[in-house]
Image 1 (cartoon, helix red, strand yellow):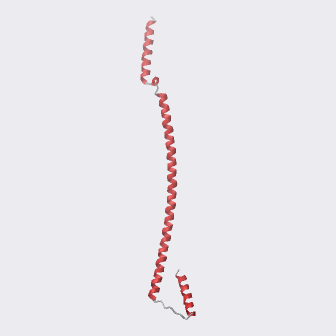
Image 2 (image 1 turned 90 degrees about the horizontal axis):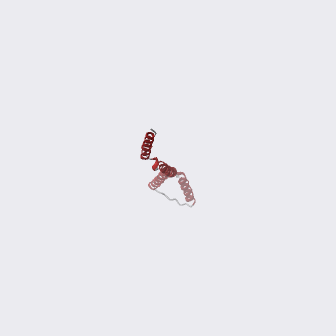
Image 3 (image 1 turned 30 degrees about the vertical axis):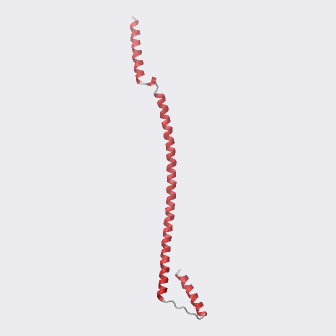
Length: 125
């Protein structure tokens, strides 16, 4: 950037010699001008770093968004599987929870059948 300004100032100076006009710029103004250019170059480098940082953040956000979508998709699949498992447990309960599959029914049938066998065995004599 300094080189371009230097070349432009040389061309301007040469052009001024051709017209016999000399513009004198105080050294303090030139120093302030070059200091301002240095400041702008520094700010430009900072902006370049910030842009690279923002691009990295954007990439991370994209990666996190993909990860979140995958998690949500897996959770929906897990919810479906759990609903299927609940339905299977309900079907199993319907089969095993019948009145003739209860413990009290087995005890009553056992007592009645044992009593009947004993009674019939007593009738054989």
